[in-house]
Image: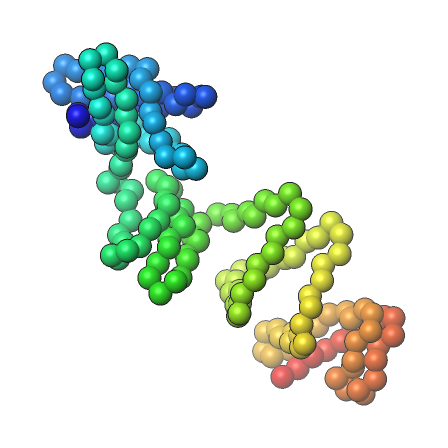
Length: 177
């Protein structure tokens, strides 16, 4: 078993690595085995565990303490050198963190089942649907800055002022707290 420093990793059907081992020892174009369902491409300078049995040389693990995040006992995380992470925290909490863009790419349908959900945006938020966007809820509250929201209500909706249904298209609706 050898502790090495990764020089490069090449993607392919068989992932290959080049690394430095002990003094004057370099391993070139050798196989990097990883766990099923998990893959990574370590950066140059990351550490590696390399097994050597004669000419059979494989890397089975890598780590990069430059980017490792702190965890509580029992926690698990996936993370990158750019600071993105999926962190399985204590008390059954999952934190997904990115500084740029989070995309959920589903071929058919995305379903999120939860007892309670809260989405907080510190900037503008937009919902875009190429078809219909549906909200099924007993009550929908629209609130804006200063407790006021402006918008257009279409379809069968009960007017909060008159108590009568809006049959097709309402005038601009103002909702206040």
